[in-house]
Length: 543
Image (cartoon, rainbow, N blue to C red; front, side, top):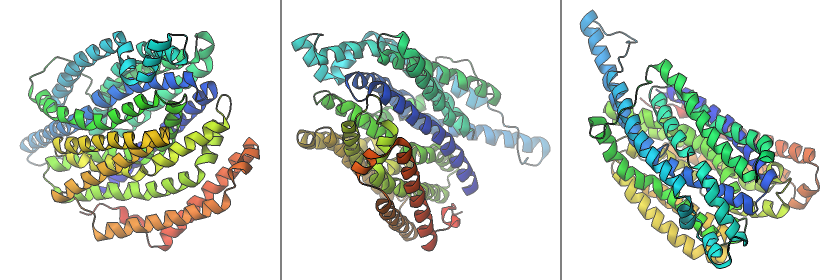
């Protein structure tokens, strides 16, 4: 089990690394094209709304409800196949030719039912795009009402409503892409789904470079990049579904056993997943009343946070959920707890040095990646302040990705919802307390505080239910990682130069200095963990 998890985690993390690197390239292109001004604010807003619904209908609540049920049906097919082989041959075969009757039927029913719902939501989103701008870009709407379309806010309002009509169909494409990815992941084929986001980034980059000159505004070129990127992601999955024998004809089946079970699980999961997304949209709403650039500064800071979070947190969580679901179906609580512990150890191993390195090198990294074209020195400072606030909660965000599947795999979606609602209320309170004093940085601090509260309550719930708790050995292990990351931060700090010195360097000198700092930091981290006795065997899942 341990080797299989490590191999699957490595595959997903590598593919995610490729995707995240291209995602950074995409953001570099956007920053160069539009900086952190009004146009950037509007495009990032128009991209955020369909992504909010994506978290609800695709990768978030849907996956959390669908994967455990699909794993249950797939396990049933495997058991039936073994039983049939045993009865026919009087002995179990080591690698049975698994029949996928129940699995295929469930996929057909879910894809057909989801398809109708997603189509209606997508059409409504395109037709009612101004309404979404009113709801989540209230500052622009108020200015449009008071000063008309000639004002900065008025222009933002009208452009955002227009861009949403182009970006909203992305929701339809990505929902079926996520469905296909969940199916392939459950069958142990992780690489395809992990690679798929690469295609979106490539298309957006190409549209930014070659499409901007053919549109009225660069924002339109990027919006069409989102549209076509979603379409290509959807089409890319189809051959792999066919090869796996699970490409089926969708059918509406609202009351079937599998869909009914998913519906019961997805309703509370919708609330649970929507908590974080609603918090982000509330941040966007408040930011629309702040100075121009606030949405963009928060976005670029969030993108840098998402690099380690997606590479390690989401990458490991992707392989943990199907494994936990299968262990729960097989009634193996010891292995269930051990798998959760493995996830915590792995993300701690990568998360603490990522936190330390980004804290020390935040401004140089932002400078090297984004400071060109329309992206100014002031933007570097503003983004770095938001990034410092977000980084304080990096490990909390990662722990949530591992701890939440501990509930969903057991088909308990109600408890994370209750926890999520408490975290959302706390985030609203933090926003109201901090935003008036710290502006957009206050919004980032509030997000970090609510995520930390969320992670702590998730862990406490698993501990009280006697599902998982941090053992003394795991606490000592994490303590060693924190100490090693602290030494690494000190080494990098000593090697790094002041902000003014970085500004006077050429681009080649900046990159060289950054590579030196990162290399020395990684080397010092690995030397320290080795000295402290951390070994590969510490990551094995205990049987």
